[in-house]
Length: 317
Ligand code: Q46
Ligand code: ZN
Ligand code: ZN
Image (cartoon, rainbow, N blue to C red; front, top):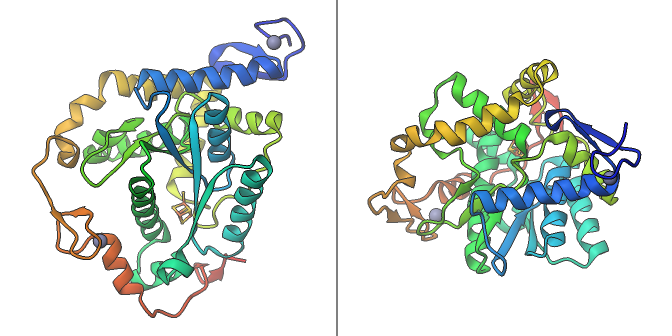
């Protein structure tokens, strides 16, 4: 197996590109593909300030590293979700990454700063943890980006993630979600621009990138992700990709090129929407008097911390 570029021994094969690469040329490919996504979707320009949402996993740490290598000004933001040992370990990983490289990392601990954690919010609201978790992350990333004067929030979603989400949204024809499934969501009043620079790269490539760059990341998944639909969609797409290399890329980029625009009407919030009111507590635009995040704060205020369980079994150790 030889590198497509230099003919030296290759360390990785990428079947959808029908090519093998040595370490150096693979790292170059990853950076080039990221830059290509940034340019193609007009994510941001040199000189703009980026806030990277880091979780401690391979994708977000690799993204932070790649953006810095490409010469962008990128700081990290980590949110401690209070999901037991998983959150402790992921926070340690992020802090070690930033400290070793002398990077600027902002940190928010839900329990310390907002008086709740994800397991407690899930118990109080009687909904799946991902619901309160996603709401909290969106609100706090938006707020941190606006307050810090950042031009965009970047997340580590890769091609496998985006193809799996698209697959799920398509299975159920969730047109509102389909309309918003774009690698860039433009800024609108009260909300920063959101970008996904890794959409041209797969999960396996991100893991290889971390190994080659000496990036330690948390391998374990969030205990709440285990067994969820998203993982099932990924497995289904992996089975298709195995016999049809390039299928994922064709599915996702074909959607962006030929279909996403057709759903634009289904997401009025992102169209030239009429003005919404401001949350009377925190000021973010909302359709009701109090925004969903402030309602969550109200509901979780004073609630006893709970342990995270799935079907009665504790999963947060
Ligand atoms: S949403 Fe759900 Fe993730 Fe939050 S509770 Fe875990 S699996 S971390 S991306
Ligand atoms: Zn090479
Ligand atoms: Zn609010």
